[in-house]
Amino acid sequence: MTGPSGPANAPGGRLVCQRAWPQRLGQHAGLSPKDLVIANPAHTGPRHVAIIMDGNGRWATQRGRPRLFGHHAGARRVREVVQTCPDIGVEYLTIFAFSTENWKRTQVEVAGLMSLFRRYISKETRALNEFGARVRFIGDRVRLDAKLISLMDELETLTASNNTVNLTIALNYGGRDEVARATKRLAQDVAEGTLLPQDVDEETLPKYLDTYVLPDPDLVIRTSGEARISNFLLWQSAYAEYEFIDTLWPDFSREEFTRLCASYGGRDRRFGGVKQ
Ligand code: FPP
Image 1 (tube, protein in one colour):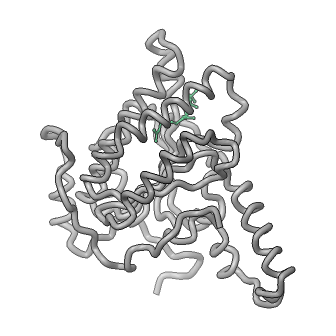
Image 2 (cartoon, rainbow, N blue to C red; image 1 turned 90 degrees about the vertical axis):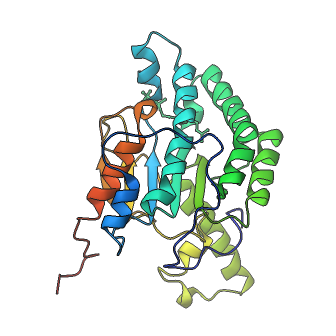
Image 3 (cartoon, protein in one colour; image 1 turned 60 degrees about the horizontal axis):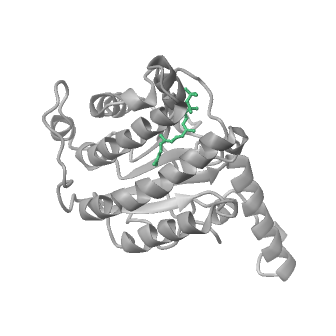
């Protein structure tokens, strides 16, 4: 399988922050994430949050700058969001960095994004590891360049025993592409006789997905005012709650993330059933 390897953290086990982020952010106004967890010891907040980080281009255009300027600003927001997760009980954070459809952008933008990913990984590796983040990548690596793939491999290996937060970065990821790749592998197992067709059910297919070690997302957030899911975690988000917010990704803050997770705690999720 091309997906992430290694076991997920024990279900229900609370993750413990190993160390402070090297560059701790200052005090924030408004709702304190610590207050949120203390006020809510049963922790009804989302365990897995997935984010479609949209609006970098518009953010840059509003400032009269090239789109890549917005992507760089967007990359800088990732750190604060990762850092917030353990404070508010989010154990898994999955972010959509580059979709299988994003190759349709101009060659300049695609090359700039690939260079940004290489720089981001090189620059953030130490900080992510010291924070105790376990980093995984999902998506198809075939179109990515060798240097980027080796940086991704190194980061996954280096952080494999961390457990402060599970950060999954979707890179050249598309939900349909993932299901197609999974189905191909599943079909190979059937052809080789290691899997019987009658044993294929909705528990079987997710074992072939890139996300097979991750729980399904509880909450999917999309920034920038667009209300669509753009091929992100299609299978996995069947019962997720959604938040579509107007904020452009480079303006997304710790406070807004905390507020969205707090409001999730008040929702009544029935997974198709009826409340007793
Ligand atoms: C969508 O905004 C954003 C992307 C296609 C790239 C996302 C990348 C980042 C946030 C930065 C890098 C992330 C990591 C993990 C290093 P858009 O360009 O579609 O914005 P628009 O809709 O305003 O044009």
